[in-house]
Image 1 (spheres, rainbow, N blue to C red):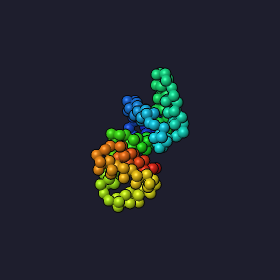
Image 2: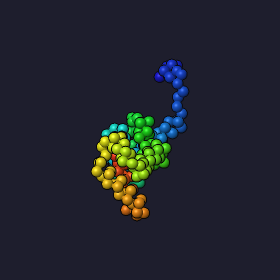
Image 3: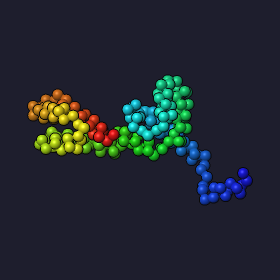
Image 4: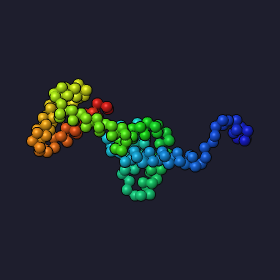
Length: 174
């Protein structure tokens, strides 16, 4: 290809420098590294190809340092074909330091507080908002947690209630 043909083909586009290409590849590899750190259940929620899933599973099985490094490079290569923005968005939800995660925890705390200090109408509101909740278990935990507050004991009912609320809200978003 002559210089003039090359110039005509890429008219108006600034060619990427080697450094820019390398930074982009390293960013994809870092994204792949974050995927490798996810729990299997979380990984199922990430929109990735089957080949990338298999590469991640292999990375997690390999123990030798150099083999892991090469496998991570391969994962970075596979990441080029993936939708990096969609993957990053899902990873943001899993990041415990993220604003979205903090917001969801505050919302769960608010629900727990409303259920413990409010009337039975709050219970009805939660059941209407999340119909997949196990109603009997929810009522039992609310009753036990209220009793704990009245008696000043800590049997862990409040913590169990929080877990149930979190599981229920996560199921409704899936």
